[in-house]
Structures are given as C-alpha cells and as structure tokens.
Image (cartoon, rainbow over all chains, first blue to last red):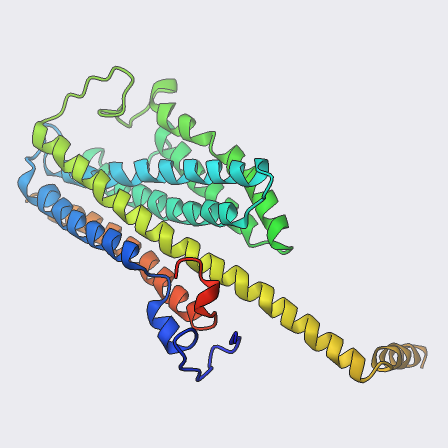
Length: 279
Length: 44
C-alpha cells in the first residue's frame, strides 16, 4: 500500500520508518561515500600539510587544491547535464531518468561553481590583493554560474514532467557551450588569471611532483563526491516525481468520486455564482 | 602558515557547502522514501 501522508504511522518494512531508514542509500552509495571521506581526508593532509609552499604564490597555493578540482568537476557535471539532455531529447523512449540525471548533475555543478568562485576570491585576495576583478576568466565563470542557476529555475516552472524535461533539455544543451568559453577565456582575452598549468594544450606540466599529486588527490576526492551526490540526488528526484504523479492521481480520483456522488454539484455551483454575479 | 585564515577558511567553506548539499539530499531522500513502497524504488 502506498502511503501519501508523511505523518503516517505505518511501520511495515516497505513503507514508514523502515523504508525511511534506507532512504536513497545502498551498499554501493556507502562504498562511494567511504571513498569520498577517505580521499577528502587525504586532500586535507596533502593540501594543508605535506605539499610544499610555492615560490611565487607561497602558502596561498594550497587553496588551488580545492579551487581547481571543483571547477573541473563542475565542467564534468555540466557536460553530463548536456549529454543526459541529449539522451532524453533524441532517444525514442524519452526516459525521465535522463532528465533527472541532467537536473541532479546541474545542481551539483552549480554548488561546485559557487565554491570555485568563493574560494577563488580568497585566493585572489592573497595573490592579487583584491577579492574580485572584472577579468575575462572571472566574469565568464560568474556567467556560467548564473546560466545554470537559470537552468535550475526553468526546471521549477509549471507543467508536466515531460514538458519540464523538454524545455530544460534544450537549455542544458545550449548552456554547455559556455565551458570552452570559460576555459579558453585566458587565451582569448588579456586576463589577470593565470593560464592552465595542467589542462593546457601544450601537454607540458611544469609543477612540483608533490603539488601535482595533491591536485590529483583533490580531483579523486571530488569525483567520488560527485558520484555519491549524483546517486542520492537522482533517487530523491525519482521519489519526488513519483509522489507528485500519485498526488495528482489521488486528487483526480477524489474529484471523480465527488462528482459521482453528487452529479449536480458542479452545475449548481456554476448556477449560484451566475446568480450572485447578476445580483 | 602565512595567511592561515584565508587558507583554512577556503577549505572550511568548500567542505561546509558540500556537506550542506549532501545533508539536504539525504534528508529529502529519507523523508520521501517514507512515503513510497520499496517495490517502487528502482535501487532497492
């Protein structure tokens, strides 16, 4: 039996508190979660402890071990949003699972870009002496953030699940073209922001081994975190959609039952309101 | 460590933001899972 009332006292294993304890977690999510916690602990150890200070940036280089992985994972999240959107639009089945994956990935991406911007402002304060500059890289990243906040707002507009999926899929595929604009902005325009050290086109990474390793640990940690969040968020979105659908079905059933019980209700309501208006 | 406030603050902000997002996702998942039978959860 499906329980629509959150205050239900049903204690059966399939609904109620037994099911709530399980929530959206499984053994796989627990394993990925443990991987995320362990690698984040490594990131703290290497980022704040073992890695050396930079010759020019000094200790502020430590901020880059969270700043760089978060923007890389945000790029990945938005690419997943675009690919999932394309899968929804161009496959015959039109599975809402693709739409939910697109939405969940965009939510995580927006969180990561927000972190990148905030942490980058701190790094900028230490390195450039200011929190913010209307520089090409910073401005295009802020634009990327605003675009995807808009994407999430569009997902919340009214309509059926498929209407939501269709319009957000179109937006998700258009918005992704901003990523190369952000990444190559430092080359296309004169920029205060440094050029890519690792993900550059020359393939020549001029970085100390321990610094590169710390960055690598950061990428691993945030990848685990991304996968873990994706699994939980897509599942809770599936539950939201299911309950919304059932709520609608429930309301329709109630309305039909009401009409069947008293077929003249609707007519007399209209008649009364007409009389009221005439009076 | 020089500039420890900004450096530690950046790590705290990162972990805080991610933890908040994770906590909200888990909490909403648990709340919604209470209202849906297991047979309708594709991951169970």
